[in-house]
Image 1 (cartoon, rainbow, N blue to C red):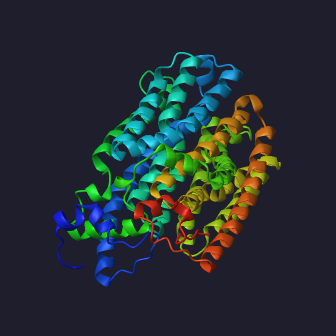
Image 2: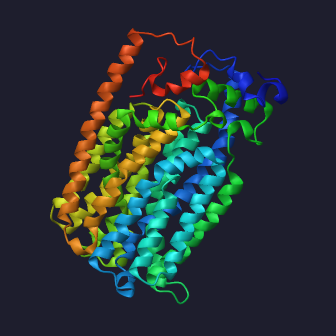
Image 3: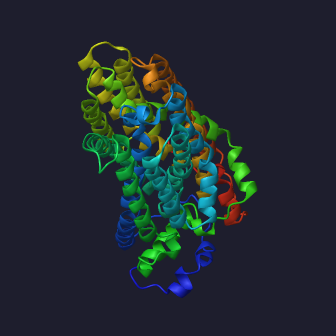
Length: 489
């Protein structure tokens, strides 16, 4: 393996490599030399993918989530927003986010990944930037809808795109690194927004300064992304011949090459017929609710505790800091403990702290617990997405299933935030009860899915099936129902 490889004969033709494989979902032991090559190519892939995708996601989150702070600036009086319009500004952004996630991921597979991901990032940034010049509530709602529509495909797209480059054993850590963006957006975005609100830019009002600067940064990052990303491993130019041969071979044995996966209506409908998608969507629905509320509306909740607006914005970074600690801790814990156990533990921590912050009395007590809730609420995000993604069993199924689960799971973002606008202050009880109920439901369903996975893995161990008569393409179509596939608990 240490010698050179003839790319024309061995690497450039992926089909030649595939015909040598006996099946998929197979574990491959590497020699010492191959392990060195694997580490080298993974380092190259990590540098190409993780930083730019994470930075862009940070700005998408900041541009989408700053509405929780903007609502307390000159935004409402300047644009004369009624109570109904305030709710629509939040809700309709989530509606387009929900509707366009699945179509966006199908288009990702039909186009070049770097073109699609950079394009939707660019258009989301432009939509945020144009909010600087909105003259009325209708324009704000329309631009927020466009922002949601373009941003819809980003996270499910990245979840699917990482599968193009990483095996199941490599995937979770990279997704966790990517999802540090959730906490980092709070740490960076909250003080950035506070600074822009207090200092202002040129002749702009406070809210205009926010969207002008943050939208512009998003646009710049989206343009850079196009020149940094590559579409597929077998078409990347930054590998040596040995690195390319090894990554192609390993991906073929694991799940196949993304460049040779063709989307069809039948395949899409087959994926959408899987009942597990809808159970997982409810899990996402509940567990993402608390991270959304804590991440976006912590400033609002702190204002109602009596803190000045600017002070509340800065104090909100504390929960984001705990969220980052939670994510960094989860990266290490996922190497040692089962995903489902971590989801339940993190969920209990997040919801217990959140409940104290929501329903207790005492200014300092509530500040402390809303800050601590970030550890469990935000720290759980990469564990959830990692667990759901690695249990799909195929590239195209992961693309469709991830988008479907996130689309349905994001419905909470269209419903619950409506009850955290100023009109429902000071305690936001309706929103608080909904958030806690959805979280408890999600934890129960996580336990149900764990029990199912345990029983199904045991059944497959005790009843082996021979599918060697099927072609590799037919085997890959089985996705997680392939007899060699084992669910990660």
